[in-house]
Amino acid sequence: MYEVNHLSSEDVDMSTIAVIGTGRVGLGFAEAAVAAGHRVVLANSRGPETLTDAVTSLGASAVADTVDGAADRADMVLLAVPLHSYADLPASALDERIVMDAGNYYTDWSGHIAELDDESTTTSERFQGMFPSARVVKAFNSIYAEDIAVDARPLGGDRRALPVAGDDEGAKQAVTDLIESIGFDVVDAGALSEGWRFQRGTDAYVVPLNRDELISALQHARRYRDMATDDLTTERTHRMPEN
Image (cartoon, rainbow, N blue to C red; front, side, top):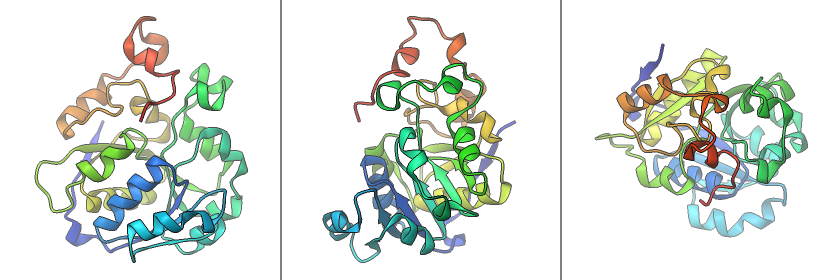
């Protein structure tokens, strides 16, 4: 069911990634991407003038722009904004673009969303429905922001594995290649509808795992409705993340 991808960073062309959302996840990803030789274009809802310090810290491979401008300059997009901000995104910035959706559902942050509460859909399927022309891949939602740069092994060695899910095989392969070049193994969890297997609160969420361990965690994932009410992982699903 699960496909393990492994690619040498030497086989990957350096890319330009638009990072929409410059909180901890966005900046953690940007740091790792720049360290691996990629370029990043940072964007947030407050405007590029608010990102001077972040750009300076990241160095010559980073610039800032508007959301539309960042997407226009990039090969793909990392979306690292809360779910309640999705509706504010300009559709023109995401049309026909590969979008890595790093979002997670926290009710304390985004309020209750009926179709996520009843598990009739997943966060990335919901996002795909809002932006049908985007080429959505669920990625980078299952790792703490500060671990992205710390755990990356772009030169190889013992690597942490990260899961991805998506309906567009070409987009998923491009994201896999990028993640491999940054320094992680990748396990393909399947279609977007399988993204629940590594959503917050599951065994694959924010736990450092190698590829065999990650495959097992995905295989044994449980829906929230199947978790005991006193299960600690269930408890984590409705709290703001501390990191």
